[in-house]
Image 1: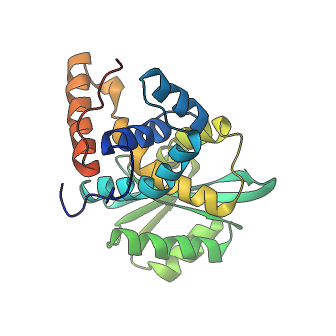
Image 2 (image 1 turned 120 degrees about the vertical axis):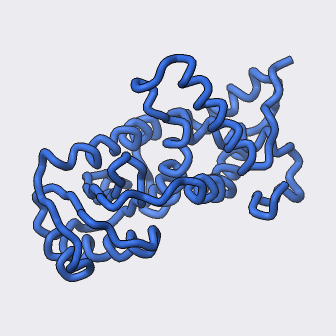
Length: 239
């Protein structure tokens, strides 16, 4: 186990069970109780509350390890924001992806004004450690004002039709939001989405562009990477 692998000291269950539960929850639109039921079918008795704690403790660590293995993002970024109800109150989920659709960062904020756009731009620059060549957004004027202030040398393209890549990247989040019956707090939404956007895309290659054989080979590679960063071996089959 490498030094970057999370520590499982004092955990009663083996790493294979822990990593498999975290994978189930972040990869598929499952509740913790449904993940508990799936593990029971495999002969592993673990409570949904234990799975919840594992996801909180290890989800972000796994997501960060997967992000470190990604290539440097492209120099063309797509930004978008959508409405999201949290505890019955309307908030805004800001998202940035590169030209290949890789999520660069997400941020839940109360507003969609210039200050919010500026905060997101600065967070992006810190997270990626680089400045893009082009930023593509919708027609929200806050983007242009913030871009001129934070990244004056960057070309800003504002056009609704050019930003489909960022808008499409919200679809997996919407699917999970419906399965979870909404988010209950801003902090909880931020924590979940930060881990979710690091783990879920790893297991979502562009399947429609691959043959069945190529897809299976790609998924085997991705599962190998997952086992390496979690320190697990393959999950044993049900008895």
